[in-house]
Length: 227
Image (cartoon, rainbow, N blue to C red; front, side, top):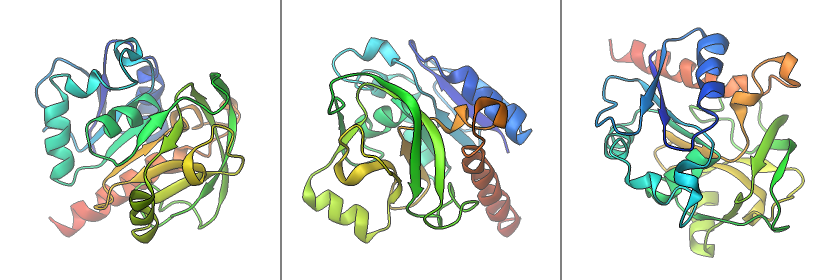
């Protein structure tokens, strides 16, 4: 399985994501500059954290129009796995690949610390390595991580089991303590916590590694079925 890590001006977690794939999974991975026009040669596409375009206008609002994003959207619509972490999640929201929006944290302060999460749905291509309701520790680092959606969208998320991770302690004020969601098709996931920073015990936790392992497991399963 070959991965692409999209690099926007202002991305600062692309190296973390790159090494999580290279070292954690042992799979081939490339950094793909935002000016590229195609990611069709990749099996999985990751949008890392950071401050794309300086977070001007809104977090992810400008990156959503980067040349590479048209191909990211196209590949997502074809069913390829797409993961957006922190700023990457914000970009996916702005691109319309996931519902909802991000607001400033309830405290109006940047929050950087380990966070306890609940695996709300372990039956996705991103979470199959976890147990249902498993408690895990993954760090957060964001100023605009307060997830918001209207009540109708929330009902859809709940009905379709699209809420994947929630916070044990809703420190940023997210609606229903939402930390991560998937699209209805289940192949696009956005989350504010940083799993790439929790792939080895030397980092304080390896709880994030199972996300990458789940993606690889799902790809291998689908690849076997189609070959």
